[in-house]
Image 1: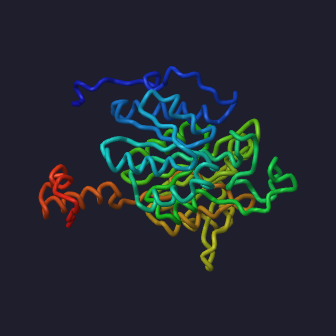
Image 2: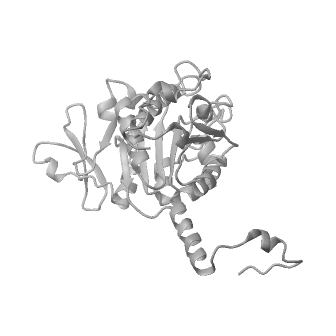
Length: 338
């Protein structure tokens, strides 16, 4: 469809007729709102978008999008999305999942979709709890977390979703916060524009079973000091007065420093989103010693899974010619496949 005949879409065009049935005040509303705002800007017909989810509160997402969608089974959304994207590479395929759905039963499917570099946009809503099943601890719940399933505190060490994505060789990894409208909007747009597996962790509040899990990053009084925004080509500066930053010690260990008294921005780490080692190092920064990094951690280019599959098929056709499936099936009791 040419630009002259393209239909201009709005946010309302991407909202379905289904009643949104998340708990009042849930962070999922903010994410839905931003996705519905971003998609009309992309110039892509609604029928070319597909949203695939697993099981969990976040997985109701396809019902609320006026696009194609598939509410699949627990943890398997990346596998189903991989099949669809491989068969129909022209579609924009999005996976919506939660920290339990993606990192527990679905962990294996997630890491393989990332390592294969399937051109999927994977949105992981991380509220550090199982919300749909009423408040059990999840793979991202902090150690010592008291929940219905850990009444004396979780003995587990939590996963860091960004570190997992980077370790699985994702070509794009980012983190945003549900109620930070502009930043989330920008990250979603960057994810769409990336050709390959784009993983976005969205820090999302469950105000019923884990209220305030990300409060330092969302409260006006603490936000500037609690997070550091990753911007390609810029030094890592943060703080309400932008008077602190991150530099590397002689032992290549990150450290927080106060600007002034001989320390300037030239001493700080200049962020490079093409550097996987730096991305992983910053993914390990955790409060209270460090601010929480948000923004794009990594964006690199490499061939996608579906592109390489298509190249194999094209090479086979060039070498062997077009096959006749009907003739193969009717040739006798035995088949010879070369």
